[in-house]
Image (cartoon, rainbow, N blue to C red):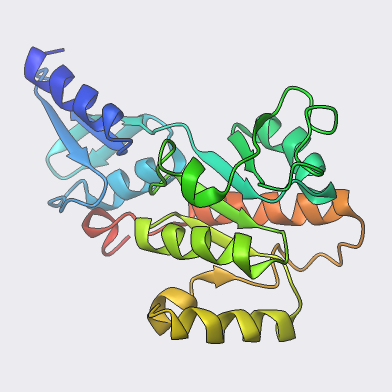
Length: 233
């Protein structure tokens, strides 16, 4: 691989941006980053690779090309050290997600309840200064406390996180929407919040709700908007 290509991929990895390389039989390699425009004939194939992370050969009118995808490790950031978080912490690594839990309530955020989990017992606004949100982060807010949940929800919407979900009934979410609008959040961004959180599978227990949340996160990751590269895909 040419040095210029490798440097471009390294820069993308450092910035947690997804990239796809397109190689032809002559050995020429092009790099396409998520969010940038991608010319035909690779547009649809590149968009699929950016969403799936899978490599493969694509046949076009100009010949065969090999596509290789480089995706940042997706992560889940949970606001709230509750029972649902305990179950989600067990499931997320199995599905390939790094996971962090933030909760300033030290009665909940204890190492005994979250052994082996990346747990931060600080206010989200402080913790996120060292762990900035990005397009490959899913934000899950489950405390039911506006003082704890609302700030990171606004930050996640602003950062373009691929998933933003919040626990609560429809009535609770309606109240949340009013608070966010009052804080200046645009309606288009408010509409991106998944609430009630999780796929509708009739979940009842904390473990079942965690499964529903994780399934919804996976759906959001694999069907996300990949920007100009995804147009027409």
